[in-house]
Length: 227
Length: 250
Image 1 (cartoon, chains in turn green, red):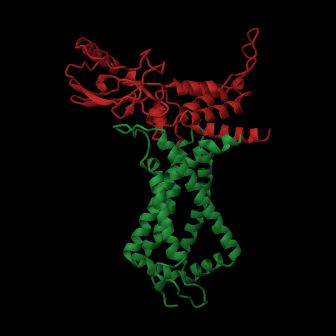
Image 2: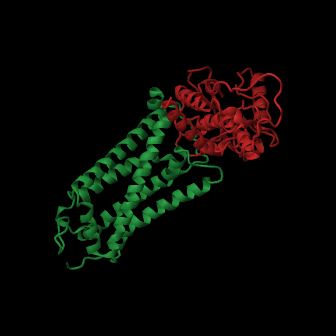
């Protein structure tokens, strides 16, 4: 039993799927949280300070996310190594029939996401990449997240980087969400198309929600207000 | 029709193979692909050359013996066909058709286009037995099976074990095959007694044989000559998870 549990590719697939679902849940909350920037600087700054109100909960949450990312990445990497070994001699003409580009490039998009998220954390959480615009406070003495975001996304290169990064996440999700349904055994005859459409819809929702912020800043919809 | 065949030639297992191009200026569009291969072999024998080795048996799409990746797709152009059901007319005038063996660590090339697919047989063996009462023939309606259920069991049982799913999978995974074999007994009342054991043993054997894992790209479902549904994969994942938990509880 133990040997089967640790050696089976199916168990690794369960881990990738379950952690993927958890990370998707986080991303959904993250998106809804971000959209509060459209309610004005007071709303987003209040939400940001609420998230950081309890260090115990904050760090517990962060530790949980880190474990999810590590488990997701480790199992995916182990599976990728096994999969590469399974076909030592390559085809001259690689059969691609019937599969989507997203499903064949999960390891690649996943790696890009890792780099994107690392930069994102250094940018907005550690605030190490743009310290000149990242440490303002609003009239209530809270960290002024609003001005940090607006001043960051006023730089077109940075906005573009974020939009491409988020697009990569959503491309990954467009296969990942439906793949999780299969790995967790939740696909039943007649529901296949519904599941792939659901995966596409939730990916597009995340993309629109996330990229709306840099786009709104670049088009001047979100701008600095004197605080 | 004027066609060129680029065929993988490999003398024996572990030998270095290469592609050899054969001209076919007078291919009859109504030949089957394998008849074209037969004609090629006739010519090669007359020329004193070694004929191309390829697998075939029933030539009516039900035995699962024929194989080869033809023009980038296992079993050649067309939906829900085996190689023996591919026709020359499916190609265009002047086409250069690349013909390769199924490639996977678990399917070592024996010669030319012939690969050893006994790994699939060993997975079926690992599935073990089904408990049925022997003796006098049971009364026909003693074990009721709903029409929908028997249809699903039959759809899974339609798998001919050709290995096209392995051949097309980017991970050379046999998941669709194993899922079909687990499901076709798992749907039926007669298959319930050993259902957990079957799922555990067949999945374990699949790993031992060196197949890759499933990335749910569903390429297997698209090339399967029998149209085996990938919902069987989800069902296998479910059965295996329940089996792991129930074994842990014993």
